[in-house]
Image (cartoon, rainbow, N blue to C red; front, top):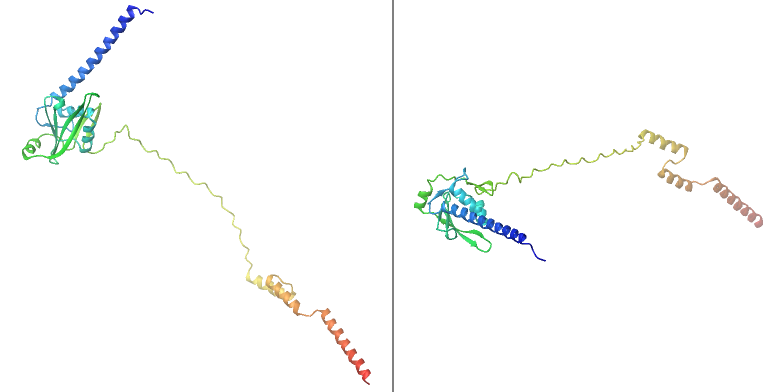
Length: 257
């Protein structure tokens, strides 16, 4: 199957157009990076503003923090320096110095460029002490000791060594009402019947009179007395035995005469 010449020409024009766009974007990125570097290199000590993110030092640090995670995390923890100084002729051979006047220290950073991935990381070393002459030059600068204000990826951020959560990420707590315990039904209490002492005494006295036991103790006493008290049958048996013995004595007496 033969491909028409018109399709081939359209394909070639489209491919060349995309290639030109990619090259133009790379050139613009390199030019912007070089312009940012050239605006601050070999300019001496540059103060970092805490209110204006569009100062030269603020723009340079913000651009480099977008490229280097090491630099961003370092400034987020230590806070922004009072001033910076950039030296070098190319971005790959530059030297960045961060001056912390309140702590009388400075840090030095050099870029590490990965040509394969096209990334750049700043390797930071220090702290080093600030000599007297450098302190006299840096201290009068109108830098803000409370931190620097930067615009990173379109968002403004204050780096002062303290964590500031973004209000868009803040989650307001949800208060869940405590469930009320179920109501318990009141149990009906059975009242014990209390027998007055006078009634107990009257009952015990009536039991003694009538001879009918009313509780367990009286029942036991009643049974014991019943066994100990002879009945009418027992009395009749004793009388019969006495008559028989008397008759036997009389018969024996008649035979003896």
